[in-house]
Image 1 (cartoon, rainbow, N blue to C red):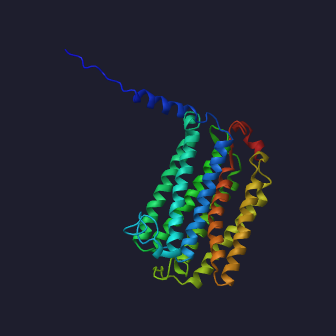
Image 2: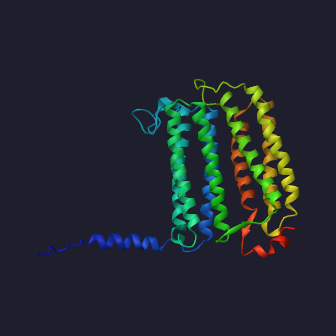
Image 3: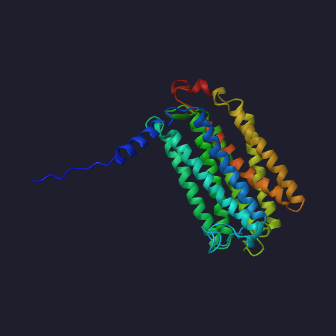
Amino acid sequence: MSHVPVVETASTPHRGGFIRRLFERLPQQIGRGTRVIAWLVLISNIVIVGTGGLVRLTGSGMGCDTWPYCTSESLVPTRELGIHGLIEFGNRTLTGVLVIVALLAFLSVLRLRSERPELVRLSLAIGFGIILQAVIGGITVWLHLHPSIVGLHYLVSAALVSLSAVYVFRVYAEPGPRRVAVPGRYALLVHLTSAAVLVTVIVGILLTGSGPHAGDEQSARNGLDPIFWQHVHSWPAYVLFALTLVLFAGSFRMPPVLRLPRWTGLLLAVEVVQIAIGLWQSRTGLPIALVNIHMVLAVTLVAAMTAVVLHISAPRTIIPVTDTSTAIS
């Protein structure tokens, strides 16, 4: 039997060694860099809601009339497209920044995949979610800003913000199993409040799809009465506000280690500002700046609510099962 000699090129081991050296340079523990990147993930996913809102509010939704190209013949906006093309393409470009930040987050925890597998899974989920969001954005353009797809686009953004908030929380949290460390009735109240957040955001999406800021002048509307749905939008918002007041008052009786007054207080503060902006915009004819702030605050509200939900649990090492009755009485 003849043996064919294996010829190794000089570049093969060199390439493998280069990749190995890069891998060895990745962080082996949660440090300042990993935490900074985690915050960048959250902030960038909130910021893109603002730029996406600007696209809608300036009537630039069809500033680039196709996707992924801006026109049928050009990847980037042409002079003929004017400011609308620049605004729409700028929002698309920011998606690339989000992908890079998500990749950095993944690389910053890759060597921790054995000790902190949840961080790897979360960073991957965020990265794939951003790509999915880009595809939905393309479908939105192909369907000429159909209000249902535009609404889904915003809802996915809110989900990504929530997921990013979870990632930030887990980066700071102790590894290992966690358990609910508050009384059942308080935990139920937290989940009812989070449901009210979801309903408020969805009704807000429906309201936007019926009004003047649903895309551009040629965009379809969902046919709902915007005046009536302004009132409908306020109902779950005020229910949410009432529930949050109860949450905040009750948080001072929870285990101090959970720091719930801080997070329920943040949630309450965001709601106060959001209600004020909502009333202001409805009484001043929906100016672009206020509507955009309202959209960004909505996903900030989702992030704050996510933080509250996460902080009703604690590692078993902090609040052991045997100490439950003492800890939450």
